Length: 61
Length: 274
Image (cartoon, rainbow over the protein chains, first blue to last red):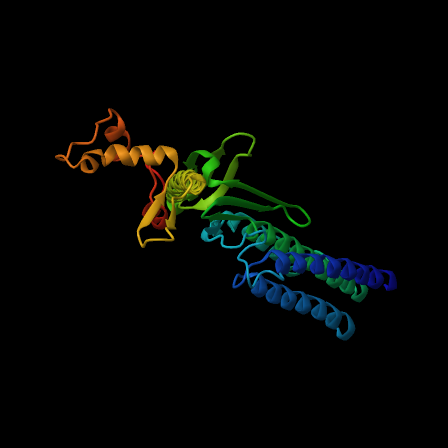
């Protein structure tokens, strides 16, 4: 079980790095007033919901 | 990002005016959107079917593993969707008053920026092919350029016929602008040459004689001769004679010179009518 949790955390680290790279592209090559900011917010919210939901389910169910 | 407040797009020159800016039609992203949606919904559908029929029953550890795998899968699909969206959203076509810019974002860490002057454009084609493009008016615009400049292919552009017409119009305008600029430069060079010629001509000096108040012109030899010729009749005291007529002078100098550039023309911004 511990190995699976560690594997999940390692995946989260990779996912975090990927998200930083994607956000960099949105900020660097996006344009004023376009939908990149909205997309970054929506993406962050959905990611947080999935990650928190996963840990919450693991710990309390 | 730092230049975004001042410039519309990276690489924009000072004074360059953006006339047209577009990205691919949203329906071109529909396939990717549906795919991501299907991939998101699929595990829930499978879980619902399996649990409803009671095919597999997991112990608590197995359930926790399944939850973590589901979280991983959903994050993976989300990341895939974001990368596809960036690929779609950052593909941009920009037409300014002087050039055409094609920015192609190929997922992450691969970006291709190509540009060509509007004067270099040789041919513009628009193509609408397929059911969705026909109904929703989007298609491919091909721009062929002269020389070694690369050709452009803008896929899934909304209103491709309108875009191609607009590019052709801008191309013609830029050609006229270029011709006008060249004519103005030639006109300015002619005008400056004439001014230099005028400066090189010796000016007549006015001398005041010490004894009397009469003014005497000190002219060069040629000018004195010309003056004496033209005033010959008056000096002799006889009837005024007509000055000798020289062929070609009236036609060449006295007549209207179509190719000359006056200062009024230069002020208007135009050059000679070549």
